[in-house]
Amino acid sequence: MRKSLKTFKASYLLLSLLICVLAFSSCCEEDELTIKGLQICTEEPDELDSATCDDDMSTIGVADNVTFSVEIFAAESSSKITSKFYVFENGVYLPVESLTQEKSLSDFEGKCGVRVADGWRPSAGNVWPEADIKIEVILNSDPPQIVSKEVRIRI
Image (cartoon, rainbow, N blue to C red; front, top):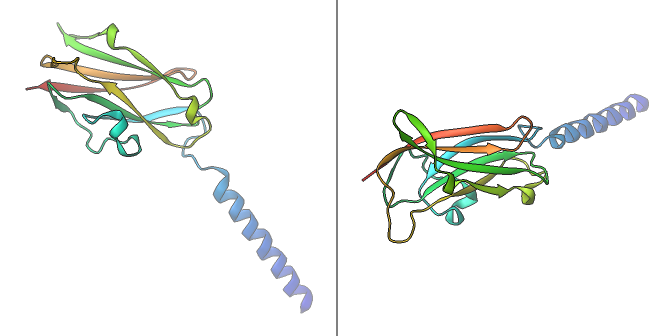
């Protein structure tokens, strides 16, 4: 009887340990460098709570900031995102090269499901023209991963 109690305790301890290991071995829903969850909003990137847009917007005003937020998984020290701003003209989206920007993700190396925000604001004293735009965010993974969203700028 004592032997079966010892076996039960040992089995229980082993099972508990196995559950703990499995529970903490993978904190990410993605194990590889991944980008997803593109959101668009008008807040300043530094003012966002946890770099998350409260409202994912499809239309913004001409005086608004254009801010994006993405979720990054399993960032590496060399990881970076490139964000591009396109304007719809004559039936195609054309890149506005002067608004292309890069952001290093090295601060997030090894972290799980981190939201990152960045964006653009109209230059001082100016507003955006009314336009249909596309925001594209490229993660320098192999192969590169791209998320994009179309947005309207209206008065």
